[in-house]
Image (cartoon, rainbow, N blue to C red):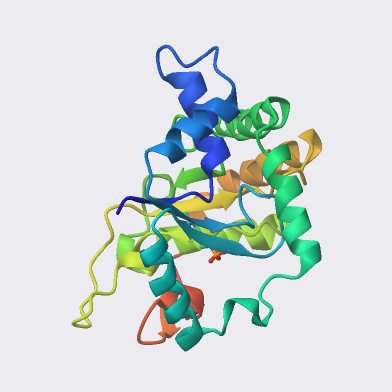
Length: 248
Ligand SMILES: Cc1ncc(COP(=O)(O)O)c(C=O)c1O
């Protein structure tokens, strides 16, 4: 079966409307309907394009498969009626799903990312273009080219953004993907830093603040050093690893 990870379905529909020939006059709702008609099911993290602060679901259009999933759920979590999402959260999700396809909201959200990307690009900071829907991605390997990938340039950028401006970003690179199951470590394909943007939280002045923090990090970037990992779990180390800065 073809199962869609639908967590950013509205942003994706917005990009289809903006970028694909012949889609520009269509409503987001009709594009969303077309997308899901092609699928046999979906997983959804309602914290993303449902505006909720918790929850999600698995939906399939095959009753036998749904029954198997419910049986598995009993083994792993509990019977579907044991609780799960509170009524308040279900209401929030239902409301969120109708509000998320508002085109003014989607335009504002994507435009905010574009604005930050344009400003960073203008400063000579390497960014992934075109701007995405949920985040701004900085190419830390290119920006901090004096820090080799195995000294985690993405982590260095994430730490600098936090120390300088309290901005919480996330390395998506060698820390996340560099460790192989056999224990060896090699550079990931890229060392990016993701600035994921909460929905309906930030204003223009927050975007300008982010840009100002980057200006300050840009001034000190040649003095930034790499990091070493001093403690890491056997799997998915990026969530809980501990780091120490390397000198010089
Ligand atoms: C594309 C994508 N799918 C699924 C998830 C998982 O969502 P959750 O944390 O609600 O399980 C995330 C983020 O966490 C995501 O970015």
